[in-house]
Length: 126
Image 1 (cartoon, helix red, strand yellow):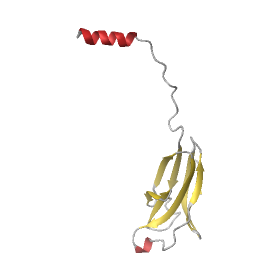
Image 2 (cartoon, rainbow, N blue to C red; image 1 turned 60 degrees about the vertical axis):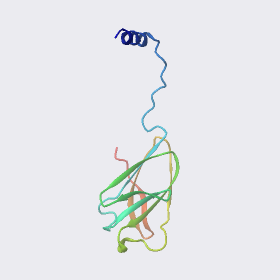
Image 3 (tube, one colour; image 1 turned 90 degrees about the horizontal axis):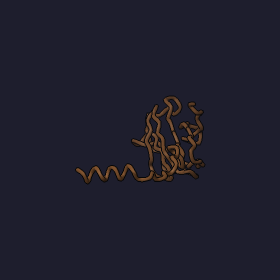
């Protein structure tokens, strides 16, 4: 018991070490939020979101997904997933490139155009 008490007193009496300054959470990363509005894309098919050609998310109507990503350029691609009627065909859909900065929050929503599925900037919810 005395040894424990002596160690505790020594710890409390030691000079405080300088700690590195606290950094805001998310510093060094960007937040990317992608949503699929209920009426924007009128298909019952799931939409697959590919980041750097890797399936990173699946969205049904009314869902959204967010990612903490390092700053820089990211390649995004959207395609329908599911049964035969949901398959996009033989050609791979075009990808979009988005440049992200550290600390930035970017919001996009999925839309359907004559060229296929695409991301369009969504207004900030602040």
